[in-house]
Image (cartoon, rainbow, N blue to C red; front, side):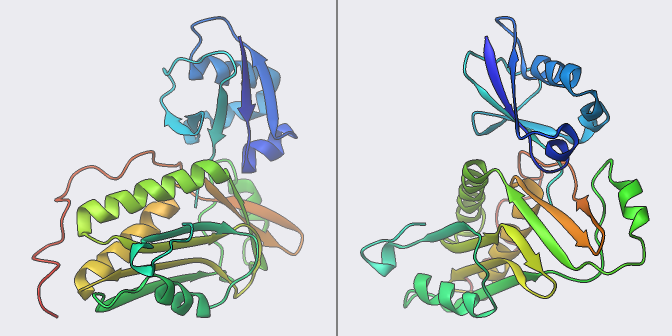
Length: 264
């Protein structure tokens, strides 16, 4: 059977291609496909411990079976729609190539707010000059740029899967915190120093739920959405991030401490 393997970020650069088609025996698994990929591109082998996999847009274990025509995405470490009535517009989840500034927080809040919302909490992530933690396998590249300032970030995404993950995160926020009006907008492409790369806005009747929802949204987006970040320096770049999580962190009460609907 024939399976299409998609590569992103570090693996794409190392293999020199975005896509590899492999022939596998019937009954083969995700791990078998990885081995076939490594046979063709041995340079990818050291990255096995830090990659995750997605079969046809959903995270999958290495033991997951594959079928003819499947798409297997190799996930390296990761860093809407209109409604006729505004009261029905509950989510804005987007990837954007075009730049946006701090005003996006007000814009998103105005699009989603209802008379019942007493709290609007926004978060804006910006490109900073100091580098982050290099992705596994990028330590040598990071050492070459030690002491230098980051000039820009470059974002790459598996877009359909990323939007699907943002939908899951929004569902979890609704269940955990009772917050149903939420926006997550993330840049793709180059984001120069000082410009915004991600915006999160959470709206709720009371501030405790809105604060908790906004923090959960940005933390889980960074940990789980297949969006990759490279820090660009004057003479090179370094991919940064940690191995992706496919699920929320286990444990904990899926509600806020106390009553999130208590009077503010």
